[in-house]
Image (cartoon, rainbow, N blue to C red):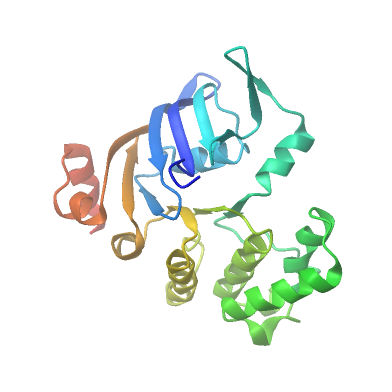
Amino acid sequence: MPDIPMVQAIGVSKRFGHIEVLKAIDLTIPRGEVACLLGPSGAGKSTFLRCINHLEKINEGELLVDGEFVGYREHGGKLYELHERHIARKRREIGMVFQHFNLFPHMTALQNTIEAPIRVNGETKAEAKKRALELLHRVGLSDKVDSYPAELSGGQQQRVAIARALAMQPKLMLFDEPTSALDPELVGEVLDVMRGLAKSGMTMIVVTHEMGFAREVADSVVFMADGMVVETGSPSALFDNPQHERTRSFLSKVL
């Protein structure tokens, strides 16, 4: 349904022991939009991403993807955690690209890309291979399908990781600082792939330190600090006219 947000967080809190890393997060990401999460280290950005696909469990609040809970069902006004099998099924709809590429070192780029569609989605090798080749072409790696990760640059490995996530045909893509482990000259090739994804209408939430990318590609920019959403707005509003001193202080150091 077009009017249901792709992601909706309502009062989401998360603790590790006595440390509260997310504090009553309220955030709505419409479908088809790109949201960039900015903020200092320890702000809770990566934890929030991991809560969206239930890699981390929230302690309070509600977190919905496409109008449905991930990892929970509601009954009688209470949330009950689902069996891992049901969680995994829901998680398939959410692609995630991490800071480190996490490719299988003993598999080629093609094998890395077809593994999950075959094993998890039950696709035939032929259909998985057809889509994988299309995706590897889309990320500019048609000539590297038979290369192993050790034979690829960091930027190429990250592009394989993006193709691998897209092979599951997700409705939402999460990127957790996808360029921070790359040499500076390799950052652009990964951001170019992400720009293309954004233009295709993919809903994306991107934790990034690439301010130029956020300004150019994001529909909304979310500034987080100390486990809270401090400020959110359009790129021009947030970068050119931040409303909060904490946002101004952060941007003065990174722009």
